[in-house]
Image 1 (cartoon, rainbow, N blue to C red):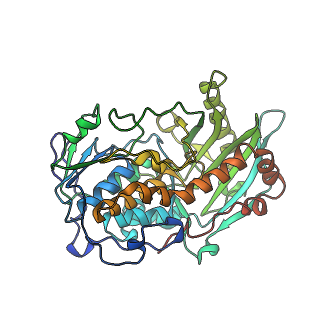
Image 2: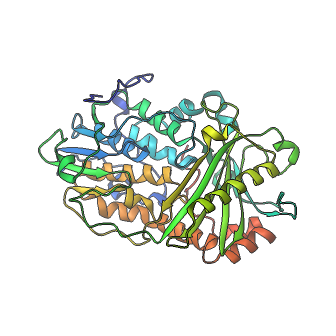
Length: 444
């Protein structure tokens, strides 16, 4: 990679071999990929633009830049505005890595998905794999102790021909792995944050650039001013050691868990996944509590976050888990929700990938890493083929908006039904909103 003002890039991975420069077609109706990708026909590279500026160096930005830089049409003409990923033990961003997500990352990088898994987990990949997911309701007794109710299985790898469903990974660890595999690509880096769309175009390595924003930000000159969000997701997450997990007999090996309870008209919901992390070597699981809340004067941000923290510590104790360095690893957030509708506002030569990939309520369903990888792959293929990417992104995200809306109903407006299902029949009840298609296990 060429670099104007970023530090020297690490290069532990050999540059991509010539026969790995083509991304493999991805099967799976959930992806709603462009027809020419699904058919596996040779890609005809007829781009309308001669260069691309990618604003943001998160997972979506890195994947998009990698896919474009591997194309002869854009090789040496891709610029990332941002800083290379920095490893930090704090849990910032999503940690749920669906096995399906690896398909999109690998396709953008032009490598086998097994290489990514090996790079992330090494000899621990079997330990961190989640083969099934159970669900339960939690409660608190009069002394304030948390109790876990009966559990029920609602997802199993055997629903997907025995393939692994998901893994747990720190977001910056995943970004760092993608970045490592990009070491042989010619990509320019600029760390100065742009103030306008024209600023972005000024960084182009060509005369007719296309600008893609992959992180939430307002960019003057690109569309209208975004409205104030009406809803937010408040969340807190931590890594955990598991000294008493097996003796508690609630959360078995290679199993993830959904757990929640209704409060103030919606669910305090959580998921728990196996985790192996080089910056938290004692961690074996991670947990996140989240809740959809309405904005406005009645929203008490700090109070809601404290409830999420209390829930994390209380449920983890009931599961036999122990926090790992919470002062250094605890992550909290209040994330604005986007509209459910398709996005048709359009600025020539510009794409708001972050908004298109958000797909309604974030982190509730579909997982941010998966949506970022899918959106990056679809946008990259469209730009290489010379077609407008926004329509293809609206189509690719349609199914995820529907899934997000359905789960949002279960944890929000219809949370009484969700709470009842968790209390009395957690496995069978949640199967009613189980996703169809290969949205978890992907292709191995």
